[in-house]
Length: 555
Image (cartoon, rainbow, N blue to C red):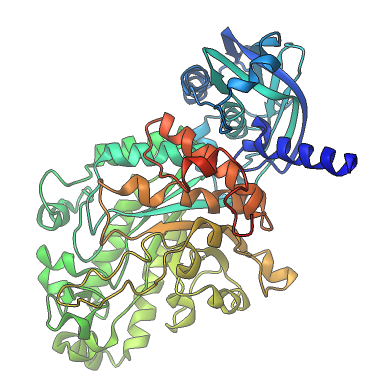
């Protein structure tokens, strides 16, 4: 009985201890049970890094500020008041020293974050002694140091003016299981101000999400100002104030890069392009055709006439211009939900096919080949939705990244085709599912991907289910996605956070995590997000959050 009680106490301490509240969970971590206070004069030292880049200097300043101002009370009954006896006479930590491994090249966080996926080095080691001596954070890249700073910041709590942790010494050796950990945001169906994107990037960096998949344009609006193609935004944005200027894009890319995040922009083609008809009606088939349900998956109808060589030239020049705005190595050309009846009914397309002697399928292949050649010429790795592999008979370059979205059941077929995979399955990772139907005159309508995908469901996803060992190597990672038919600035944070953090841990720490032990940690990151101005929602009543496991199904 005594042994069982001791084991129970140890388990409870592990669940609620500060070190156990890290998100994503480090892949290798050992902790002690000694309290340590943060000195009021605490500093983070860069003295051993000669020529530290400005974004690392700024990241250090933010980390120091967060440590002092998060003011997060521990999620236990009493919010940490019972910790006073443990920390009141504890040693104090005055310095965290950052260093790069011997021989490491000093590059900016941004430069490291924008490297090709498999060339990024995100590993770090963190050691915090219990005696108040200097803590050490070491990595082979500034990107790794940035992630280590993120982990360090999650260790600390505040009570009655004291900032402390309870679980030193702490020793962490950490690196991601997968190189791609993303969040997709659709800013075409509804517009999001730059400030909302900044805040989202801040939240992403808190949980080590490293790719912002920006679905910036679609059939409903074209809010992206592209040099040389400014008529698209002038005529396709909802309003002149609802445009991402070239300067906005530059600032967003810089803001993201400084937080360890690459930006993968998506210009979805040839479908989802009805809005281009506002500037170039001659390029778009079935524009505004009715009933829209015959010619598109959602209103308004309209797709690029890809059989027209002029459209192909327009598209490749547009992609080239967009590629110059985004310094990262990935760019998505979409390719989903192509509506064939639209082209069957389009007189111009049928005339073009007849004169060229091509089938629609052959014309599409020529168009896609031109897109991919353009991206290769500017050093971009193409990304496409799964239909480009599983539905359309087109030739893709072998380095193409394929986003599997229709169903997780489709992953195996994409892997068998030999393409690298980004998990984006609607049955696990779509944040808009369960919001009810949004199409008018349809009182009994539901969202097509009902029910809501909870954080627990996405957390239990297995990225390599049914894959062979060789096929599993094709998995680059995955992401949550927010399509915004029913979302805007008003509900952005609550619908994304903290649910999107579940895939952040899944693809950093690897699959197999336990939802019971994860929940207290996810409460913690959600509360910390709110302390930093992100309106992350409650996952349970506060009574449950303060009592780990008490609200489990069979508790």
